[in-house]
Length: 91
Image 1 (cartoon, rainbow, N blue to C red):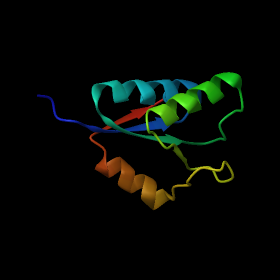
Image 2 (cartoon, rainbow, N blue to C red; image 1 turned 180 degrees about the vertical axis):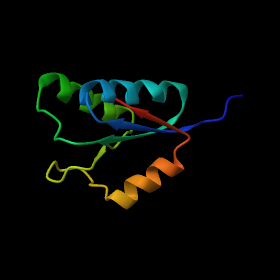
Image 3 (cartoon, rainbow, N blue to C red; image 1 turned 60 degrees about the vertical axis):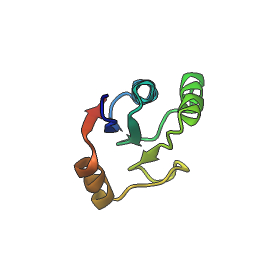
């Protein structure tokens, strides 16, 4: 039996695709953590739908950008998340 991995998804360039990937990884039973980076998430219908999917998958997104209504990670907390992850995907 395959061991469950802890995956960190960094949403750097394409927030929408990062949400899709993060949700999809839960199908395999992996623990997934999603961090939005560099800029706020755009308020589009597509992103709203993806955020609902994240909720269904029990993924609570975080951010490095203040003012989004999401938990904000400091540089140290992001560094710790990178070290603790079995796999890091940057999108």
